[in-house]
Amino acid sequence: MSAGAEVELSRERSRTMTSTEEINSTITRPGSVKINVKGAFIVDPDTSTPAAGATNSSQGNGQGSPTHHETSDIRLPNHTAVVSHIAVDIGGSLIKLVYFSREVHSTDSGGRLNFQIFETDRIDDCVEFMKHLCDKQLELNGSKPGELCVMATGGGAYKFYDKIRDALGVDVLREDEMECLIIGLDFFITEIPREVFTYSETDPMHFVSPRERIYPYLLVNIGSGVSILKVDGPRSYQRVGGTSLGGGTLWGLLSLLTGAKNFDDMLEQAGHGDNANVDMLVGDIYGTDYGKIGLKSTTIASSFGKVFREKSLAEAAAGTKKKSASGGDTGSIKLGFSESDISRSLLYAVSNNIGQIAYLQSQIHNVSDIYFGGSFIRGHRQTMNTLSYGLKFWSKGEKQAYFLRHEGYLGAVGAFLKRQPKNWGRRNSLEGMEEILELRKGCKAKESAA
Image (cartoon, rainbow, N blue to C red; front, side, top):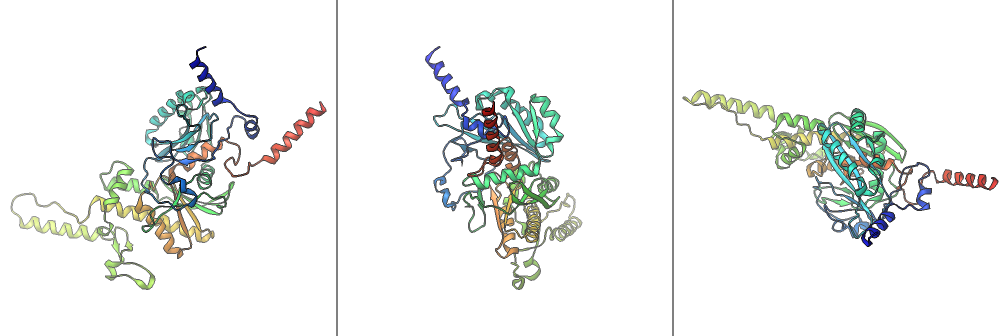
């Protein structure tokens, strides 16, 4: 055997070697692997170094840009064991995929959690990508292609179960959607620096340090529709409400009202629009603020409240012009608002509705911390400011809105983590350890008796 082959064999053994401690920690679920999250951090795209300012993350007061449509990887510098599964959260509009890759060609140890997103209508593209991961499994993290399995959650885990299983020829393990959301969110809140942040126009991105005491809280998960969960502990939660007016509503209506081709185009349009051209504001009615009840002149009194009047005036002007003209076609209607104005108005309407419902649920259940997840927000400033400002206004500063850099991947990450020992990410604890110790004692007693 050549020297190069011996070095490669040594590397392969070190990558796949498992200690007695690791075996003991996974005894409750054979085939699972305990991820080492010590020192985990979010990396900039295509780098292996912490994001700027990450060394100060313990202070929890860094600022940065919230526009992060391309989701950054999470690096796990101390994890070297094999991971032989990928996870997908298949919703009504989007598919979120999470997989682990080891950095075998890097001088540093460890690996990354990688994130991909597909439109659900393009499920075949997602399956093709999973096939690619299956083929590259040995190179990515040391396991053979046949050892791969898929952890799936969301409604599409059932709708597309046969398609995924037949195309990949691997086990597809379906996990409860709500439970996966909570597991994923708990992981981000407690383990990942510079993940959770608050937002306002005066303090655009204020990071919150990972913390251990997080319950109770509300999760407002905004996908095609909206689900609101009250969470009292790692396995204690209930769905307390929701609304059908969510991301799918915005996507569907704007596809009818504008020429935008996808959700990101719609958000881009909304960023350039002026909703005052479409919405009826308090100032349009009062001519000023309504200070007695705390309403600014820019507060929306009626979403799309100006459209009928603007359209009627434009039609009347076009009709007058047509009557007075001789010859040419002069009957086109020029409205006083644009597609960007419409996009911004509808974005505000949906966001305000979600924020109002979230506030009311937080009041009913006496919860102060509200986390917004799902693929609706996408780091969009107007959306976050609307949700955050609304909660602060209605609660008189007693409620706090929190956002996440990986907001759309809570369910997928939760499904990924389901193939672990219970509560594996909790600091200083492993749920069920008492039972494991009792089992070991029983085995030793039997061996001694034998």
